[in-house]
Length: 143
Image 1 (cartoon, rainbow, N blue to C red):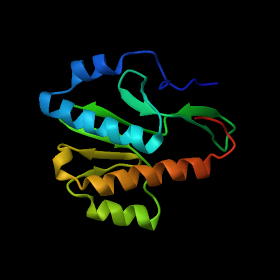
Image 2: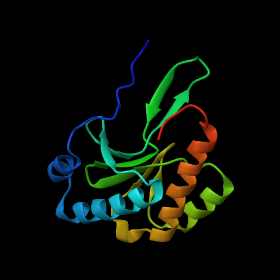
Image 3: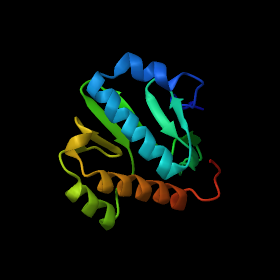
Image 4: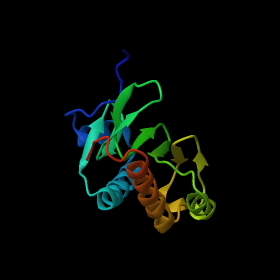
């Protein structure tokens, strides 16, 4: 059975940020970290080599394969910051419309400057995503 490549590690979040973030990004990362910790009520932990994650949940695919992932997290990808979240319901989509300058992938919110985003909308998006993950994966474990 295939093992998940992205697992919680003991790597240093501070070392990751120092090696990847520009001065401007570092300030944004610190603000994101405070917000993610507030929303998830978990401390930052590295997941794989490049995701700063908070909390965890277990999931099971229809095939029976199981895994574990962080409830919320972010990464630095070149000039972009990426926040990992689920934004599928109408309330989440309305928040995305009000968020500001960003791009959205399946579970990735890309942006360059935190200052370009509505901070309240971002926090509500993350809180909604965490709630949705708890709802979808209730009883499967995690923190």
